[in-house]
Image (cartoon, rainbow over all chains, first blue to last red; front, side, top):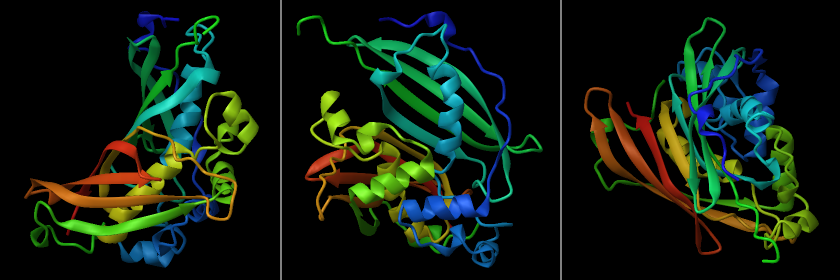
Length: 152
Length: 144
């Protein structure tokens, strides 16, 4: 299956704001086994110059990947989700995500390539806060593996 | 943002303290809940095998989160990370036993990028069971 190249350059409407809570950050930090107090103790975060607890660097993915669902589940694009694997991931931060943020994501399709029968899709999530300031950009490469040939 | 490490104190080749991160099935269930990624390849052996995997595998994003801890523990402030990227090269296979799997992470300063911004590039390697699980794993960190 080859995906429609005309989707390159397409962007999707901003997602409704995701409100980042202190307890969600704590839950995430515990799930990755990171005991750093900057994720759980507002005073420790303030001592480092942050207005409130910050989230671990990869936390933003939960928000951007959900937003990327607009692409993955776009019926016009027609990706077979059951064949999608995560190829690459990159973040560029203007500042860390922190408790109290209300974050919105605009998802862009940067490229669609076909490599060895696999569809390789580069998606970019631009995350901004309530005042419209950039927080983080997430670049996600998704690989939709080619279906096995019949009888193979 | 206040990193513990001074830009002036690091050289190209400076090694960061390495990290060892255990992963069990319980770790994956917990990560699934916290991250919202409930793909059954991360908790159902039956499903994982049906789609051609050897066994249940860790979330790539869990591996990515573990690897950067070597950098954030070193820098002291996770807010010092200005860029972080990886390629998922091999899955971390997590057997259903007490031992589970282990992710081993090493990192070193690969370049001093800007005297003005006090940024360095740190290159990371992450392995599990002797296999390289992340490729092109790099972070840009703003030091004090």
